[in-house]
Image 1 (cartoon, rainbow, N blue to C red):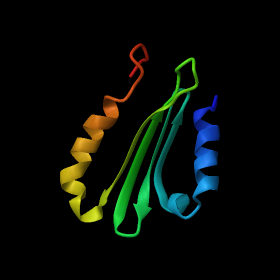
Image 2: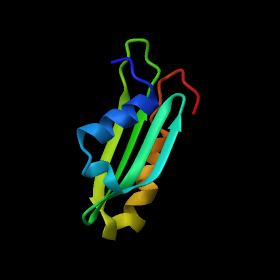
Image 3: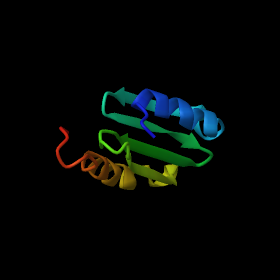
Length: 90
């Protein structure tokens, strides 16, 4: 699957419109896609990193209770910042 971050965002939204209906944060860059929002009483956070010649995509997909946000958000931030290809820029 040789997709761009923008085309992958569209395919996610088309594959599960209910999940991606309440996106509160969307960042599309040339080599990455980040989405966050709510589903019921949960927050979802997804980060996808593109750039492997094979077309593979690294992904971090998490869902956690809104009530746990103050505890979990710092961990999510740290995990997200570490997700990249070995030779890619941060």
